[in-house]
View: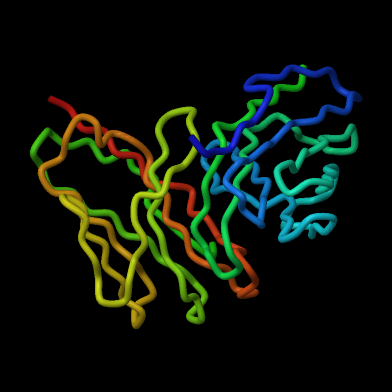
Amino acid sequence: DGGITQSPKYLFRKEGQNVTLSCEQNLNHDAMYWYRQDPGQGLRLIYYSQIVNDFQKGDIAEGYSVSREKKESFPLTVTSAQKNPTAFYLCASSGRQGDNVLTFGAGSRLTVL
Amino acid sequence: RKEVEQDPGPFNVPEGATVAFNCTYSNSASQSFFWYRQDCRKEPKLLMSVYSSGNEDGRFTAQLNRASQYISLLIRDSKLSDSATYLCVVNGPRGGYNKLIFGAGTRLAVHP
């Protein structure tokens, strides 16, 4: 079945460490996205990519980095510069341009100790 | 004012009840509207798109009121399995490709 796979599902990190969250899709979607969800808030866009080797900052990109070397993969690195990294991270993808329907992965829950 | 606002709830209703949620949005130029469902600690999943003329999918009915800038979701004959958080999603003010704005969600709890 086609879908989006995120790993790890749960991750604990110490302050000052960088961590990378994986996102792989086999839906043949062009666009991929990273969102962050905090309790009581809507999802907020971190980064998005419409095509391979291209990506744009979303609303809260500071302290994060991404790459898009393959169509299927869009990893997110949470750097030590991110002040409040504890959150639920969701990767999503969508098809052709103008298609606003998102398919989400199961999410990665990051806790900073 | 938030770009997309929802009553956080919770809405506690008995099985079989009819319940309605509203969501207001601030950008009058918004063109795309959706309801997503999110179960506790899970990812959001598309429930239904919202069309200008209103649309229905089984027990679920979505309406759009452009003049007052809100969308609504009506659930009839509530089931225990409808318990979830319902997210209102609107395409964003910059009107860019898939720059969607998510509401914080309305929590529904259906009890026996």
